[in-house]
Figure 1 (cartoon, rainbow, N blue to C red):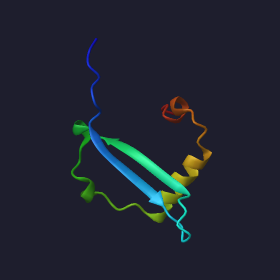
Figure 2: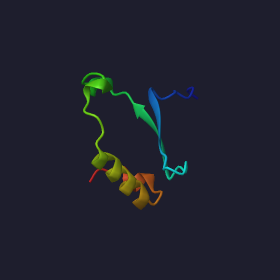
Figure 3: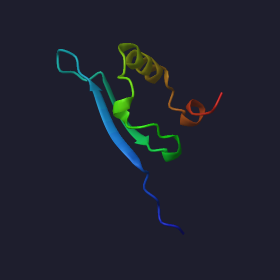
Figure 4: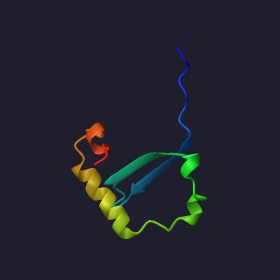
Length: 74
C-alpha cells in the first residue's frame, strides 16, 4: 500500500463577523496548486468583489451537502 500523499496547496480561512461579534459565515479552503495552469501569484489576481462574496454565500446557503453533485462538470 502506497503512503498517503499530502495535498499540495495553501490553506485559507475566512470569517464574516457582524457588529455583535457573531460569525454567521465561516469558510475554510485548501487551494490546490496546479503548476501547469499557474499564471503568476495570487497577488496578480483582481481582489474579490462584494458580488463575489455574496455569490459564494448564496451558493453555500443552497448547498445540500452532496459534493459529488456540486463538483460534476455540467
